[in-house]
Image (cartoon, rainbow, N blue to C red; front, side, top):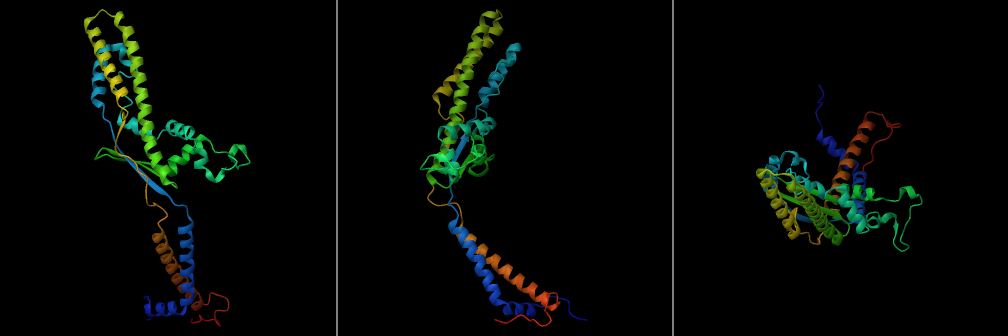
Length: 297
């Protein structure tokens, strides 16, 4: 019975017979990988490490006080669900309104879609007005390819990563989104406290119950404390542990890795093609195979 196992000697002989074609395939694959590696735009990563500020203690106290006030529980900001919460802070960091405001105020659309922008004439090169990039387009690009937010639940830290072709802009944007998040939540907290205080001041004369008035005064004190903390702390939602700096080395393309992958792909493709061609010749599935034989280099 003929041996149906793999004949490694025959495979080696085939590889040697087709060595010129294999080397050509390897060279072409490596060249393509090299062109991609050296012609692709360089990208840089900048990272900002932050720690979400925990204000759950104040929120819990406000919730307990609000529960004593019956109909006043529905007052915004008194139920304990403050925007200083960790989840809300992270959601605000990646929110459309925050990213779009940054793109609009910093005029980043021409930067994000530079391939469609004529810097000399300061106009878009797109003929169809309906295809000119919008703030929503900028937001989607920013979230898909530029901004990444990774949360470490064990350490309680959040890493904001920005990937862009300019190392200076990558660092600037990574720090800017944190500053804008802190400012937005800080201003919102101050506004809520002012609205709550105005409402509570109106409610005090409406009740003669001592316990109710005491609860309202306690809430007034709590809102005053919240307002003072927000006004006096720029890092209201996130405390910056390690701000982003301008990266010195590119994050991509990884040229050596691409070259090795191109070389490996060329080897696999070349050997596989040689073995397949030899097999087809052996089975006479190629026209003229009965007369043709693989030529040794």
